Image 1 (cartoon, rainbow, N blue to C red):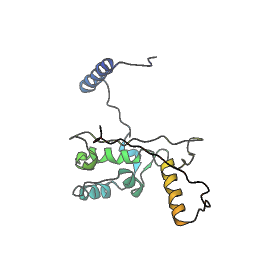
Image 2 (cartoon, rainbow, N blue to C red; image 1 turned 135 degrees about the vertical axis):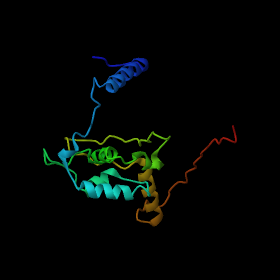
Image 3 (cartoon, helix red, strand yellow; image 1 turned 90 degrees about the vertical axis):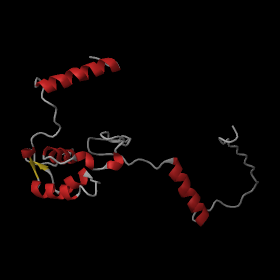
Image 4 (cartoon, one colour; image 1 turned 60 degrees about the horizontal axis):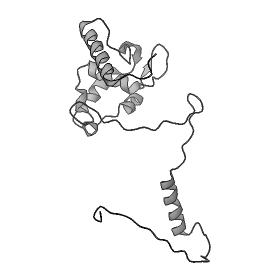
Length: 170
């Protein structure tokens, strides 16, 4: 078991994997399975996605909820239902890269947002995250200004010295 793999070795392994896929020795990995295993109104979805091509912004998860994508084998809604619709549209000849151009870094790359992991107790039960100190400080300042929080009179005056360095001073 390798805990660390060098970049050169990883590039070499990836190149070998791609060559095997092109030769047909290895099947390309799919994260969705057969589209016949999913029930949703496929014709209506394709009509809507073709009409959205002019607007360019698509939320695949919202579309999956709208069309109620369910797995016929398990009867559940898949966790990657948006990805299933994305790949279904791609398989039906729709230019996927024309959507969400505001997220694209270059012609083919999509900018991914950094996600913080949810704190979980069990598999589906997550803990609400506490407010950040910045938002908490803003709320306190607002409540002090409104008068909802009263701290009393100041007994002894405090002198606060703050210093800041700007780029112009350097």
